[in-house]
Amino acid sequence: MSLPPQISPPSGDFVIDVGDADFVQAVVERSHQVPVVVDFWAPWCGPCRNLGPILERLATEFAGQFVLAKVDIDQSPAIAQQLQIRNIPLVIAFRDGAAVSEFAGAQPEAAVRQFLEALLPSEADQAAQSGLDALTAGDAEAAEAAFGRALALDARHPHALLGQAQLLGNRGDYAAGLELLARMGAAPRELEHEAERMAAEFRTAQTPVDTTELAPLRAAAEANPADLQASLDYARALVAARAYEDAMPLLVDLVARDKSFADEAARTTLLDVFEILGSGHHLTQTFRAKLAAALFR
Image 1 (cartoon, rainbow, N blue to C red):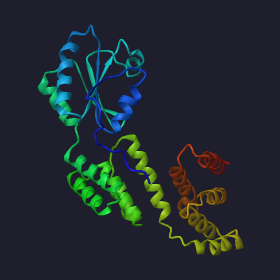
Image 2: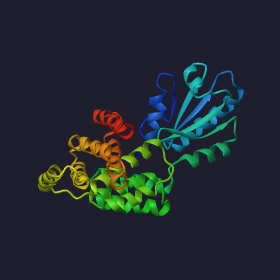
Image 3: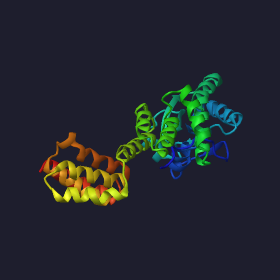
Image 4: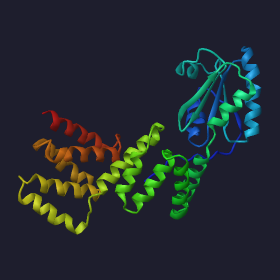
């Protein structure tokens, strides 16, 4: 189970020049590690010459708590066009791979400082990062304590919710993990996808599986093909055992036979498997088409 993106700053210069060729790597990807503040400017822009030194001075003062990326729009027309930059100076802040705030025009230093301070990691962010570090180090007790501190400060903190849910999942407490994930509000797309994948994994893992029980479950399903519940029990057990390739044909067959059986359990279980495997997996692509055919035949 992968960890949520970390929020500790990388090493390196505090002020960098960025262009079309390296914008994605230097800004979008790097913002998963540290906030990146992008200053869109041009040499002919008078207000840019006033704002630029303020940003550079504060980047040095904040000493790596954020990275200042300077983009000359004359030298980077593709990025300027893609982001629809029409007026400069324009400052856009990125975190977790997404633009989170911006301001336009030259601003006094006090206003710029306030903008930057709102972007920096909060006390809850720092506690969540401590939890991620402890989790990476294998110290579950310290991780749980740190995530608890983060959630006491911000009950919907996405990194802390994901980390705490992962700990619960590692202990087999899937119901409690799902309750935590349900608390998650708006978050960067990558974190939302991770929460959806984790929730799908927890839902499918809730079926208790003993590998010695798979044979009798299969025998029961094969002995009476008309018994939809027996087929569903066997398919769910296969999913819980991560035998997805064996389970998915059974689930599609159940949908084809009675799509509404057991509150559409076969369909929803298949959707969870798609989420776990990811949209690019060959099984997802194959059985998503088969599911559609079974639903709309």
